[in-house]
Length: 207
Image 1 (cartoon, rainbow, N blue to C red):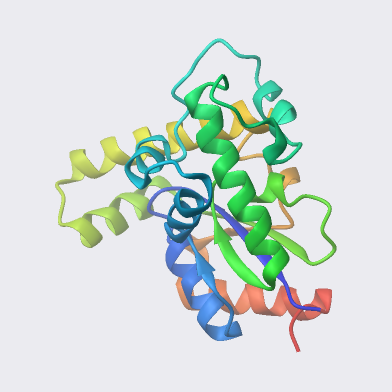
Image 2 (image 1 turned 90 degrees about the horizontal axis):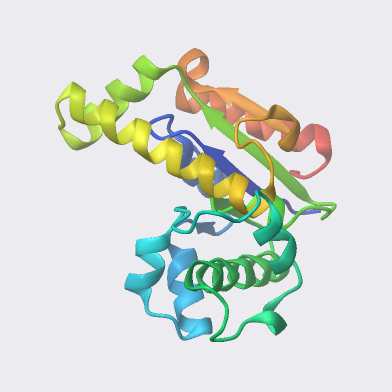
């Protein structure tokens, strides 16, 4: 059985890079921003709109998890009367569901672990690191000053956490949401990839 791997990740932890390495090792598709392109093509929403709302909760006042509960029914509920942020989420919801139905792959972020919950071949990962590691990674990647890297990390992780709670009613960093949590500060990228592959073999999801 081939796996569908979802990756939740703290900003600067290397989650995206590790996901791409795993996909390359397994010879399966990798989906990150590609999800937005797919969602735009299939929903008719413009790509810039999806980018603007990507993993950000732009509407407050709804009970945590109630948005996700009301949307966990498929595209039949989409209409112009639905709030824009929910239409954007539903477009990504449908894109992720279709991607998973087409075969194995690695999907980054966007509540994919929640959207695909219950699939036998689903492997839900969470990649994290200590703050100092995240800061150094972001400074090196973008050439930013330390204070700028720290500010963006804090803002991005807050957005991801709020977004995840809004649509799932769950704590983004709660280990019980995932099958395997990996601290890249301790392992680095290559050993993290090896740990994931070892886990897949134990689950019978990699030959």
